[in-house]
Every structure is written in C-alpha cells, then in structure tokens.
Image (cartoon, rainbow, N blue to C red):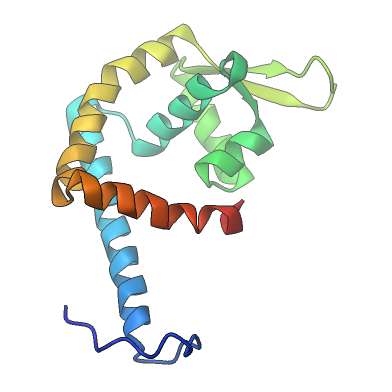
Length: 159
C-alpha cells in the first residue's frame, strides 16, 4: 500500500480518500487478522477460545483474582449479556465461579478457580508464542517502543 502524500499539518479534517483513512483501515485489517490468527492458534494448541483466555487473564491479574461483572465486561470489551453467556460456559467448565459481593447484596463477582488458573498457565506459553509470530516478529524493539508510545495517546480517550 502506498498512501498519497500527507496533507499539510494544519489540515486535520478527514475526507474520503484521505491517506490517513487508508492508515486507519490498515490498522483495522491488521488487528482483525492478528486476532483471527491468535484465536486459531489458541484453539489448535490448547483448545481454548481466545475470549476464555482473555477473561481468565483479566481475573488472574485482578486484586483477589475477582472482578464485578460490570468491570470484567469493561476490561474484555464484551457486552454484559455476551459476558454473562461466556461466564456461564466458563463456570460450567469449572474455570470460574460466581461469588456474592460482601458489600452489595445485588452485586456479583466472577472469581477464577484453581482449575482456571492452571488452564491459563498452561495456555500462556502457546498464546505468547502466537503473539510473537502474529505481531511482534514484524517489528524491531525500537519500532515496538514507538508504537507503544503512540498507542498510549489513544488510551486516555478510550478510558
């Protein structure tokens, strides 16, 4: 892809055909392809769907290995109804359990079980190798550092 020359810096309004839209689309395509590859690899290597891995990772990294459903939904970028169905499947597999909130009778936490932690530990090396193949190998360490800095600019907007 060879984008057209960039406009003058003062021209910040996007228009159809703008080279910056081409970059945005390239980012979206790259993201979609990497996610598809990570999903295929994780299923082939350990038989775990990528959303399961994501939920288990979020829970393991959370204080007390637990999160309220709303907080978990925000972290894994799923709808609350989608997350409820996913947690139902993870609970049926024995990887998470639901626990009442000690501070709010209406609140529920999702807690990772020992089996869930074990499955995540077993899957992590395979997943990280897949991340290396699908993403990291395409960039030098300096490029990754620069990309990390650039992506940090977007994060405050998302939060």
